[in-house]
Amino acid sequence: MSALEQAAVPVAAADQDGPVTVRFDHVTHWYGNVVAVNDISLELGPGVTGLLGPNGAGKSTILHLLSGFLSPSRGAVTIDGVSPWRHPDVFRTVGLVPERDSVYAFLTAREFVTASAKLHRLPDPKAAAERALDLVEMQQAADRPISTYSKGMRQRAKVAAALVHDPKVLLLDEPFNGMDPRQRMHMMDLLRGLGASGRTILFSSHILEEVEKLADTVQVVVAGRLAASGDYRTIRRLMTNRPHVFVLRSTDDRALAGVLIASDAVQGVELTKDGLEVHASDHGTFTRELAKVSRAAGIGLREVVPSDESLESVFAYLVGS
Amino acid sequence: MYNPTVAWITFRALFGRRRALLFVLPAIVLVVITLALKGAHGTVSDWPALVLGRVGVGAVVPLTALLVGTSVLGSEIDDNSVLHLLATPVRRRDVIVSKIAVSALTTTLFAAVPVLIAGIIAQGPHKLAFGCFIGGVLGSIVYSCLFVLISAAMRHPVIYSLAYVALWEQLIATLVGGAKYLSIEQWSLGLAHSISNNGDLDSHLTFTPSIVLAVIAVVLTTWYATQRLSAFTVRAD
Image 1 (cartoon, rainbow over the protein chains, first blue to last red):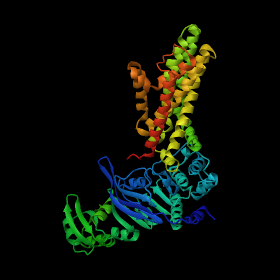
Image 2: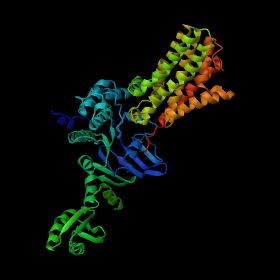
Image 3: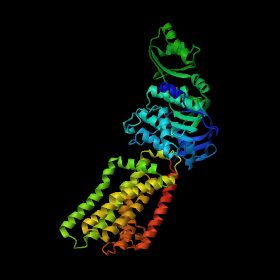
Image 4: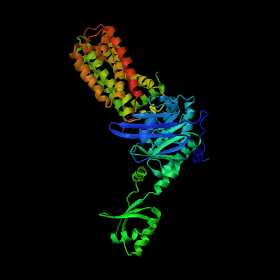
């Protein structure tokens, strides 16, 4: 069996005690005068949940609140009814993969993961470390110092250390950063398997495609607020159906505006100093029709720029809706 | 309370950095000064007590403890690698005690033992050398507790630790009468004096207050460092 096939299968079901519930109840957190998380309530159960949002949206703050490295300024965070703040015992059931690249670079991955197993007081730390290294496909490089690893390999070493005690809840902050496509696919298979076996997996990402491929449910965070929450497909549809904004420059912007406003795929047009701003209700139909109608009208297109394709604009739309 | 895995990681981190090379510098300076004075004066004058007390216990021990004590926890907090240690159910008190133990042992090796060696070079195996060594060991322990506490409680621990040594111990404790009771250097010298009975040591405290105050300081700093580490928060980017 290939390593990839192994990774897709191998995680054992979460033990008898049942799944763990992670809960945010009207949680707010300030850094000085800056509100990083603003009145968020959510509940996570078994399965893979994606925490989606642009950089600086508050994703890491949410994960740090969950792992007890921040205390809520207001509201309550609980894991199975227990606040993680000042309760390191929660790490018996929680594994954390921090985003920052700081690891004990002077250790080898095997030493690092074995040390993690010992800190968890596992009965057989070496066996637990080998199992975790197997899961992330790190056996071959496990005896090299972490300082010699690529960013993706460091990420996998961190994931192995977080998985060594077989936690029921796994929190991962941007886990795919620095991973090549094959490592990314393997990690997705692993997390999917962990979620399917009854564990609660929460990972943050600012990349829509990662969340789309992996998450059963999504929590979209924008500027510290929960902008959307629930099934990914529903949210995706909302994103797809939003008006798309394009800026066009042509040989005759005024004439093109007259032609385009007649199209069903266009909600509105506006002449600006940069060209013609078009609000399209249907991205696909508009891009197909644009060339056709402009050619028919004898207007030459010089530039077509989608102006709201960034994740931030998608989130802004979600917040507005 | 002592966690061998935490201590092992700490030792590896401590000696895996170039900063570890600095640990031997104060000791080398002490031994070189001792050899130079021995060559110039032999053993006839009062210089051994001044060198072992002022330079050894008063400078080499706190400086080495500062370098080591702020490294064992402060460096991990600075680069956030401490998250990997704290994302486990290990009790925060065990983390602090293990870090202090590593710092105290390393400081003893790189500062108190060189004081003993310098004492033997100066006068041969003598009560002064042994007394200053024991005083140095006490200083290694208490300074380690203080500097680990500062690392757990403050950003830029080196600056605050240096301020304690330079301003409090070298300036205020020598100028203000009552401040000697809150000086780790004075507790160390008090112990060294009570063992060696050497009047040339610049000691203002006797055995009992030195030991009692040192024990109180160890307990309080360890407790408070544990409280601060328990409330460790990730800094905003």
